[in-house]
Structure formats: C-alpha cells, structure tokens
Amino acid sequence: MYKRLLLPTDGSEAAERALAEGLRLAKALGAEVAFLYALEPLGPRLLLGPESLPYHQALLEDLRQEGIKALNRATRMAEEAGVAFEAHLVEGRAAEAILKEAERHDLIVMGTHGRTGLDRLLLGSVAQEVVRKSPKPVLVVPYRKA
Image (cartoon, rainbow, N blue to C red; front, side, top):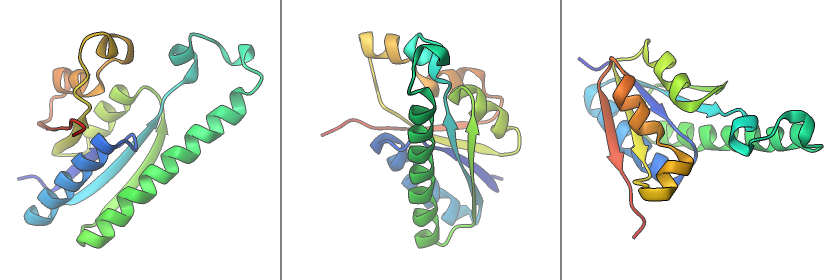
C-alpha cells in the first residue's frame, strides 16, 4: 500500500498540477507526502564555473528563494487538502536527489513538461531519468499548456 508519497517540484505549472494529483491521491489513501525541491548546480547548467560569474552567489540565493517559494506553495496546498507533509530543499541534480529521497517512499508522483525535440535535448528530462532508474513506482502527470 502507498503510505508515503514523494512529490518533487520545480515550481512550474507542470509540477503544481502533479502536486494537486499527488495530494488528491494521498488524501484518498490516507498517506503522507514529502515535497522535494532540488537546487541544481549552476556550473553545468551555464557551462561556467562559480569563478566565471561575479554574481554567482546572488544567483544561487535567488534560485534558493525560488525553491522556498515553490515548497511554500506546496505546503499550503497540503494544508488545504488536509494531508500530512514534510518539505525538503536539497542541493544536487534533480533526478539524483529524487531517486535518493525515493528510497524512503512508496510512490513518486511527478509532472512532466512534455518537452520534445531540441528542448528535451537541451533541457533534459528529469521525469524520464527518474522513470528509467527508479526501483519505486512512478506516477507521471502530463502537462501541456492550453
């Protein structure tokens, strides 16, 4: 039975749709949820090292604040749904962080942006990597802008 659900978020509309689905499922099952926001390293994303960007620390702090905002939105959603929760902001690659945290959970519920072509090649697919590597079941909630 699914008693502990992991709901990763990146603060996007796609992730928030998945959060809503995950919370609906958790409420129906009487399960608790854990929200996870992974603060990805900037170097690989920008193809630069911290020494190359004079504003590296400020940018990192801005991203951390975005993560906190995303987790705050998620926790408000859980409170409104009446679902027990915990929230974690971790540093590291998103897929790796999700897979590591999933060890303590029964099910992962996450969104996908539905990127294709060059977007997927350049931005990657966290959901795809998690589905491919996870020993736990993964519920992927698709999202496309109307």
